[in-house]
Length: 264
Ligand SMILES: Nc1ncnc2c1ncn2[C@@H]1O[C@H](COP(=O)(O)OP(=O)(O)OP(=O)(O)O)[C@@H](O)[C@H]1O
Ligand SMILES: [Mg+2]
Image (cartoon, rainbow, N blue to C red; front, side):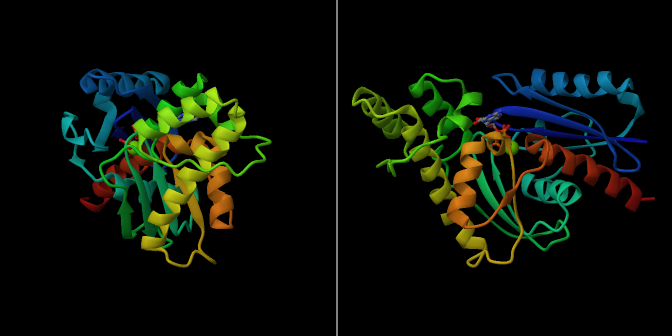
């Protein structure tokens, strides 16, 4: 028996296919783009093709992410918070605080240590501190988003950005470049700004982090600079699963399996 999880995010459409033993068979991450139906079809086709199975062989599909209601043939649509909690428990068992930073949302989820959601906090409807913010900053710095995570290496000055608003921060970055400030110092300032904003969210669900195990999911967890800044602001390690961007889709696939087995 096979189970499919689909996470239709604002920037990426992720798919994970698992078997009855909860083993991850294949994963896919494709850009959501303007037509999410096409992205859903592509992500689905990629995982099925890699595994060499047809959609008819899939026992159940659970959809999550902002586009979850757009997935045809699903057993159910489940919130991202629930799916990320279930997914991280399978990868980093015992996680108590999960930070998910994606394209347009940043969320902090307090878990009970067994994958169940106790409480969560989310950013307001604003790109500040999200993947979209980082993409705008990468453009201003004229670097690829994939390079951004290594740029802050050897930053020495404690540069502080005066605004986290994407539009203001972008023009501030352009002015700093014009003033001759080194790119690594600017990247360091950006990462610290994201980390302290995220810390504000963390404090809402976990006022005292000491002794709690903290992990991160979402595409921004691939940005090592942000992860280093978070660990430094939190004063403790932030664990990252091998494929942080597919944690929600994995959780969805596992919930599909749970539900089918419960209904037997
Ligand atoms: N290799 C990488 N290096 C640095 N950053 C990365 C990398 N891969 C992805 N990202 C970041 O991840 C972001 C997308 O994250 P993700 O795929 O979790 O978003 P999403 O789930 O579509 O969004 P949301 O959950 O907010 O709807 C990008 O904006 C980018 O900042
Ligand atoms: Mg997401």
